[in-house]
Length: 107
Image 1: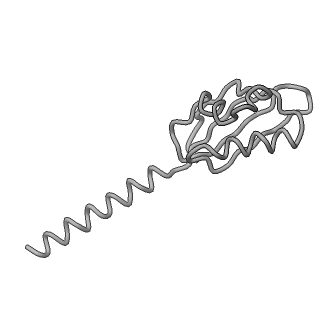
Image 2: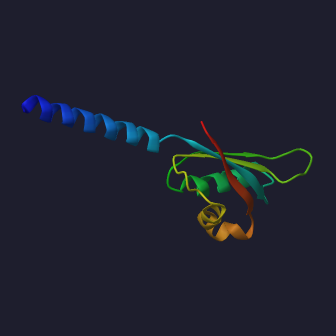
Image 3: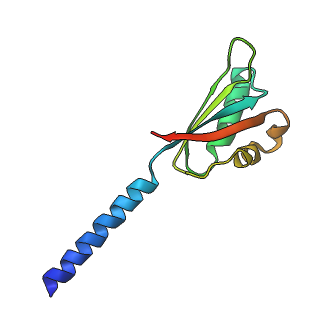
């Protein structure tokens, strides 16, 4: 009986560890953010977006041809939205506009 009990505990512990690891898998998001024209703008936006739960990395690529800068976010949250990103910007949302944000893949 003890062996069975210890075996069941080991199985449940293993399953819990696997589920926890799956939940923490990074998810990549891509989008566009208007208003970012310099490194100070980029740093401001990155700081705000890093405050979102689960966000591990924020990259902004300002193009040389004048098109809207590209936004890349890596997060453990599978439910990051454009609206949440705009809310994280707070009062800076008057200067920066997250035009799109879509989940593209898991890393």
